[in-house]
Image 1: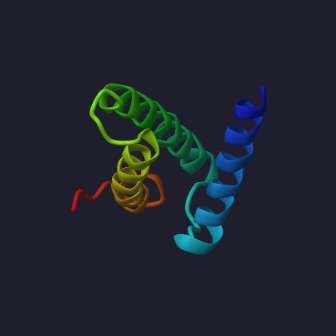
Image 2: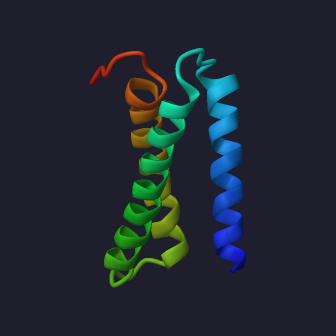
Length: 92
């Protein structure tokens, strides 16, 4: 239950910060919230799956998690910039 609450709070705060500060969006908050939620759930699933798959290698799991989550941060930032908070889809 604590993990679910923490994820819900972090997702909500992340959305608000990205909407108003990172991307200063003035578009359609409803559409952006749906898109952000899709990306948020996919990021969470990708992180969990990749960490599980790579936990068999002889590297501490915390290091594997740090590497995977760092890579996902940059991927998700670009998705948010070019799809979630963009007026039109732009793949760069």
